Length: 319
Length: 285
Image (cartoon, rainbow over all chains, first blue to last red; front, side, top):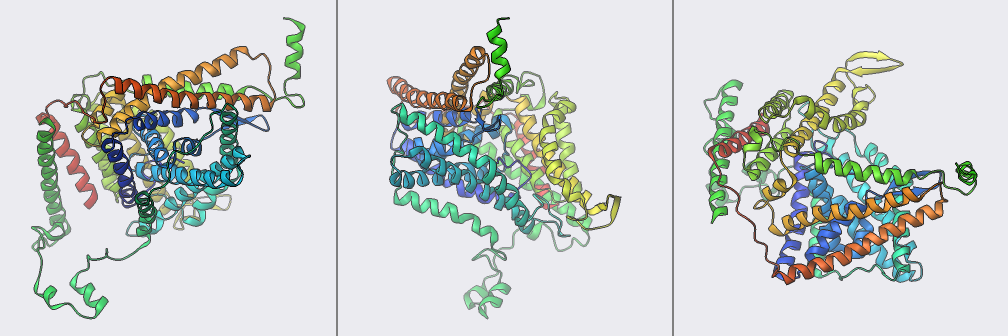
């Protein structure tokens, strides 16, 4: 389920980074600000546990075996937010040190396998274990099954919308090439029939054992309103991918005139600064070669700007 | 060999018995391949080369720029330029192109299998270049498929180049200043304790393997899995508590301080300039 680099368009990757950064930032601020020293080792070693649990193969009927992802069990034990951070750490480590999953797709992978699976796994378990208090392994199995399938569904939607949102001028796909009608069944059916049951079985076995051993897995914290808002925003962020046209509030005068029927007088008076080289070219550039040369010059200036920023940033690091 | 041992083997796979202990072997395989990557991964880190001579932070930023340049490339020419950049960078860093290709091969094979239907007319209609068994490979399909495979390959290639030339600790240190310190500290700890917990997992699997003469039934095998993972889970929580106490006793208050990186040199700035140039060009051409 780790989406590699090159399968999602940069636009999609940025949306998911933008969605996950507030989650990671808020979690890091929380740990640093409230000085909950206890949280840090638990999150980090919880990430290590998530990593290790993937290494175990579970024997399944028929003499075969499969391995589990373990996101539901991590969320059930650590709670949903700590689960998100612990699983994000494991996914980041896999991408950065072992090239398992992409760097550009890290935000999307964390959204699918850390955020969605952690929250769905935890809350399905909490609700079911309240109803089935004597049958917690069963509740954990359903939670794990739901978590892995929702993650797979999210990944399949992300892959399936690529032909719609990212294609070349001739309409050919540039990234994941298959539509939703192909990606959803291709991802979801194996998870519903094979990976989901393996995940459910593994999670139930672990919960049954730890419950018997007197170490009852229980989430640690209740959802707070701020986190709920943040969660809602992160969940809604990818909807922006489905929107077409100019971003809200970034209309040109012609677009405003088309939308509302007139251009407000004050706005009409302002022409705005078009930049030194509007659209990376100059009016006298008459052919493709001249435009391309000007673009190369703009790129050189742009990269010079990046060097200056890095230089200044380097100075700040040393202070 | 005692008779009872032969009888036990003969019963393997019989009614109610689990066929084999293959799941233990697979668990050990998973662990050993992970360890191989950990200890063998950065085999070019000690060599004298371009990437190795750069400040780790600069190396990471530059490679990220190149990965994004490959992600943004919309035309074959831009992608070819990025591939050329990757090969030159590998050669200047003392990494053999074949070695790099070997690292990229799993991603290339996986993507080729997934993308292969795109070559055919039932997914990408167009002018047929090859016809067989009522199916046709189209020119448009080949162009689309090869472009996507090449993009995945070159992006995986840049990541592999970074991992081959940068030790794990340098990589994590290099990320200081790029992401919040708390995450870097947590990543360090995750990496360290993954190795410790994996050692426990390996010991458990080896202990079972060395004590098992014949296959056990499915229920027992699943029970073993549950007890081992449950034990590691308990160990995770107790280790976290111990580490917390150790950190507090050494004066940790929750504030993260990171070490300064070395001063950036002209070569570092040149690398950032070149890679950002490639990124901006790739975005526009």
